[in-house]
Length: 450
Image (tube, rainbow, N blue to C red; front, side, top):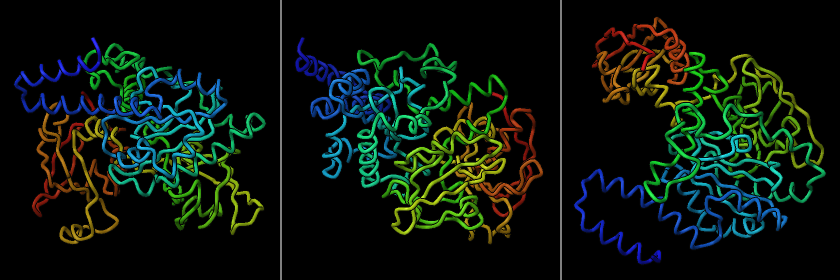
C-alpha cells in the first residue's frame, strides 16, 4: 500500500468516527508529531531522529555534527526552533557546513554522550563523529520567556565557534575532554526504574507516537525519583542542575557566545573580578561557545563549593586576563528551579500540590508584610490526586503563605521547595501560617508520601 493511499484511507476512517473533545485534543497532539516528521523529511535538510545515520555521514564527509534535541509538541521555545527548522537565512550557510540531525525523543538516547539540562525544550550539541563535543547551546530560566537566554544570533556564533574548533581538531582534543561527563547511572533513559517497562528504545509510529515518547524532562524526573527511592533525598547537584550564570552573579548577553552584560554586586562573580564587557573565552580550560557551556562547567563544581578558573579578554585587547571564581558551600541554592517542568512533581511531593509565587510590593503593603519576610501566594492548588494533599488540608488558591514550619525567611518558592523536600524525607505534618482575605489562619500540611 502506498503512503498516499494509506493517508487517504486513514482520513476517511477518522472522518467516519465521531470524536469526543478528548479524542480531538489527542489527535491534534498526535498530528503535530507526525506532521513535523513529514515536513522535515520532505525538506531533506535535516536527518530526522536517526543519530547513527548522522554519525556515518559525518565520518564519510569529514564534517562536524549539529544535533538538535527538540521536544515535540512543545510551545515554550517554538519560535527559535521554527526559525531553525525553516532554515533561517542567517543560519543556513553555517548549517550547511554541518551534518544536521534532529532528535525529537530521548528514547534510546546515549546518556554517556548527551548530558544536558533536561528541562530544556530545545538543546543543541556540536560535536564530531568521534564523539568529541565542541559545545552545547540552549539555556532557559523561565517557563515561557526565552529572549534573555537564546537567540538566532547567539546560535550562529556558537556554530561559527564549533566550526573553528573542528578545523583545529585533533590538535585541540585535550582541551575538549572536559566537555564529556562521567559515566551516567543509566546508559539510556528507558533503563531508569520509573521508565523501565513503559517505554521502548524507539518511537512507535505504528501506534501512538506521543505516548511512546520519552520527553527530555522525564529524564530529570526519573533521576530525582531514583534518588528519592534509593536515598530518601535529592542531592543538590540533581535538585539544582546546570546552574544559570545568574546564580553566581553573571548576566550574559544571549546574542553573543560568552559576553558579560552585567555583574551583580556582592556576588561570587564580582568577588572574582568579572566585569561588564568581559568576553569569557575559557572556563576550566574549556573553550566556550555559549551560556550553556558555562552551565556545563558549573554543573561539574562540587556541591560543597570549589574554584573555577576563567580566562577573559577585555576592551578588545588580545591579551588574556586570568580569574578565579570561588564558590562557597551551598552556592547552587542561589539558582532558581521554580520555572522547571520538573518542579511540578517536586511540588506534589514537598508542598502537597501548592504552586506559589512571590507576592509583589503592592500585595505586601496591603498585608503589611515586610520586604525581607516570607510572602508566597498560592497561584494554584492541585485539584486531583496525587497532587491534592494541600487542597485536602484546607489550602485555597489566593492564600498567602507567611510561615512554614516556624520559618519566615523563605523569600522564593525555590527556597521553600528545597527546605520542604528535606521535611518530606522525614514525612511530617508541617504547621503553615497563611493570610486569607486579610485574615490569618493556621493549617497543617502533610509533606512527603505518595
